[in-house]
Every structure is written in structure tokens, then in C-alpha cells.
Amino acid sequence: MADERATVTCPDCGLEESFRKLADARSRIEDHREETGHDPTWELGRLSEGVERAGDEAGICGRSGCGDEESPLFRDDL
Image (tube, rainbow, N blue to C red; front, top):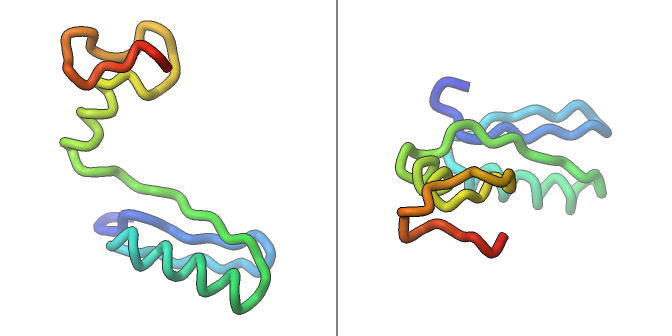
């Protein structure tokens, strides 16, 4: 998944498509649901560096001791 940000798959029919834009992947999921009644899923590739860093600082991984308590993004209420 070099430039692709998301891969949509469907276990019911073997659908597998990769997308550069998350909006396109989301649209494909909705279209496939409407067309087939299947429940496809997506796997996200890497997010932008800033988004990953913000998530790390906020401690959104759900593990204790995760996050940067000095960051204004840190959430201790999770």
C-alpha cells in the first residue's frame, strides 16, 4: 500500500480495493453495502505524521502510561 491510505475488503465476496483518499474508500464501502447487502471493512494505512504524533501525545491508545502528560492534547479521562 505505497500511496494508498485505505484498503476496502469484503469477506462475503472477496472484494479488495485500495484507495488514496479516505473519502473514496468510505464511498466504496457505502456503495458496496447498498449494492450487495454485504458488510465490507477497511484497513487504514499510515496517517499523516502530524495526526500520528497528536494521537501519541493525547494518549489515545488506551494503555496506561501512554501519552505525553506535558502536551495540551493529553487526555487523562480516557
